[in-house]
Image (cartoon, rainbow, N blue to C red; front, top):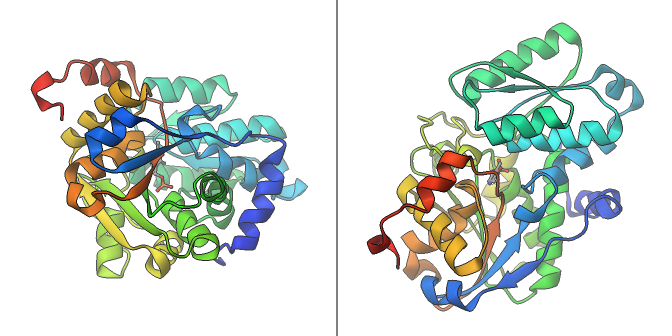
Length: 324
Ligand SMILES: *Cc1c(COP(=O)(O)O)cnc(C)c1O
């Protein structure tokens, strides 16, 4: 497996050009005031699947041979990777099976089914779902799509950062929420090539710190996986994305789930933007580590908006005293 280059990201942009319009990058004075920095929001929440991952799925499927497409794909996901693969499979006419951990976010499971993919619920968490997906793929001959070790996913996701650096060439730092690490790895590839002075800072949930701990220790490790922010909830690091992050990531922060919920509320209040937990984790990083970002021009990746109904209702009921 070879790491994607900036050339692969430019090629992905040509693939996606006719399929997805660029997403906006906007600033909100209320949000900047709350966070004590000059904040820009990259709005991946407006993607047709409600999350950035669709860029990777479309790029991966576009690069598959006809023969591989006929065998179909099997993925495992807590939801947004699943929606991305289902969307791309629907677009290219490929059959798609997704293994989701038991009791998935109902909004995400329904969206995957609505796009024509088959959903199988298996396992307590993503790691259990992964094992079962590998078994299904081995039995059927379908292509198993990893959640992290897929160069085409990273290259596709990288197009978001090409857009960002064109829309905001003067950002000092980009904050990227991490689960498997495809987003942060892509940010590293693109920043190294087109914005070498810009820092890339990753953030993961303290309750699911596998990618963080893998990066800090320099080797892929497995950790408890208990965050309620599904997009961040992976129990193990991935070789490909960890390698890319090692090359160019400036820092890796952790935030607790309560701070993520507070950040979701702040995004609603100050940026009129609905986020799922993972989609607000960048904002949570600024809440939890204000000194790290004070006075800087900071782009926060708003990676997704697929919150469940109970999650949204809870966010709007947070006690006001917590508000900054
Ligand atoms: C998957 C996901 C992430 C984490 O992205 P990785 O590329 O897996 O690190 C962040 N936010 C949302 C909304 C996601 O769906």
